[in-house]
Image (cartoon, rainbow, N blue to C red):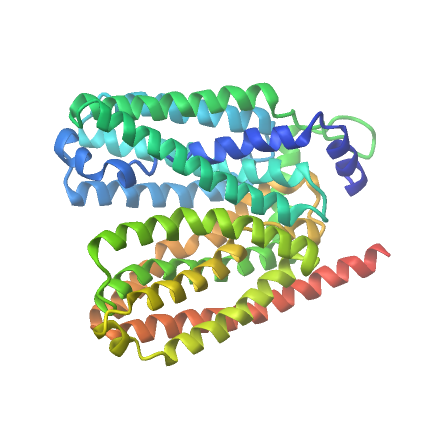
Length: 432
């Protein structure tokens, strides 16, 4: 499928922004059951009989299945229509949620999280990214992905808040937890049905002879093409470095608590702003900067790496321990949130360069699966690495190492993004 064909598909779509809203809604709902611990950690222990180790084991199993599954996803994500992949995955997640509401034994709980990992991370997320990419063109990719991130943050707050409100209204007991899980399940299934109705089917792939290509053969060819593409690997590695820095944002919370003596009530408020507020702000800003200011998501991300280096270097010069002792935690909170906002503008658009390097539309699913595999790989080592530094070097010394490593990643990122930009320029020159 040529880029002209892709542009024609985009223009022919009946109200692509409405479809975009449906996809964004689903993106904010799809992961709520998989992240139920964020809302119901203590109730899960109390009413489902789970220990800290068991909950941690389920999340580890989720991550292992996700990693292995994304390898297979490079093949399967272009084999079936995005309409049925997205809608079917959401409905499947919702059905698993009803099973979780029965409070199954631990092995059933573990299996349920394995299934959710496949449906949410393998057959849903890369295909959602594929659908978003195909809705826009090179000039709108930054805004598309930026608004996706913002919209997901808004839906996150609404859905999580509603589930917690139901839990509280029903007395915060076992039945209240069941009701919260059932609500999340119903919301996920409803999103799946909406996607089945409004998300368009994929166009049929036709060979040079004018005949429709066999889907399995075409998908295998797309997988091989994606794996051999230097451009896709460049996009993936660029996002990988951004995510390594993003993982470090987690440690701003203990930093403010330990060094700036952040009050307990403020810790929760900071966490909400850091998780949801920055996502809602960083998404549209990142999209706007990419499309309107830098005219390229890759160039915006490179500038972001440079700003991260300068900002974190200046941040390390601040006398944090003296400020913390005097109770000036607002300064520390403002600086860390400012740095986080920069990273979120980069995170919002790290899939957008797929269009700039002219990845063929028909292998978008394979490309997004491969990129997701690489970009989210830091989940398997970054937190362990940062945490180890903090345990081995208590106090400000450990945080200086963590922040120094984040600077190191940003330096690497400048080189990776520069290489990616050179690939983009090569494609632009070839297209003239």
